Amino acid sequence: MGFCSAVIKAAGAACIVLSMGSASADGVASTSAGASLAFNSALLNAERVHQEGLASLQPERLIKISTPLGRQGVGSGKLITDASTLRALPAATGGPQWRCLAEALYFEARGETVKGQIAVAEVILNRVSSSRFPDTVCGVIKQGTGRKYACQFTYTCDGRPEHISEPGAFDRVGKIARMMLNGAPRKLSGGATFYHTTAVNPRWASKFRRTARHGVHLFYARS
Image (cartoon, rainbow, N blue to C red):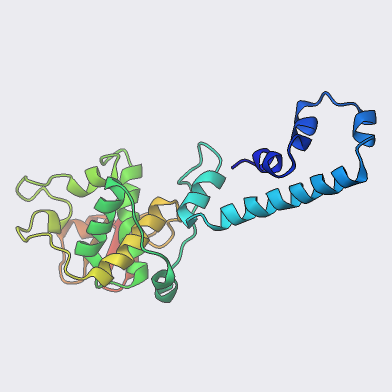
């Protein structure tokens, strides 16, 4: 319900007098004290309804409607790195791109720290932003899948079924995926577009600049 609509509902034609702009100053001055009190009461009631409506919105909806057009997703979200704070947030949802990112974080880094999981998400989103890679989250994650030694993310071509058996872990990475897609600042990976765990030592690692380490994940960017 719009602000003026709420006033109209509460005070009848009082809002029409203001919004049409055709009433004279004398007409307004001649309004009875009782009508003025009723109108002021209507204004206060409309403001209360407006505030209650905002309070009921989900955080991602608030971000969406309060971000100027053309800037959505550019630093518009808040970065949360505390596990207990994330745990207290409501379960996250989203479309195909959110699902792709959440699944990638689950299968690639569900045992990692929150910062490590965020940094892995940053790598994927940094690739989306780069002209060297596909321009969607799902495109980045599935790049090379189905071609021998060409997949970019191991879980997409390791032959194992992609079954989510740890709902608690998926709940957390789902929230991280939602947070990052909402535009949280990417400041934990140092602009990385590559990573690997300490369990492997790929040949390409010596060719790139290491930018960060979180848990068992090492992050790299092109020099």
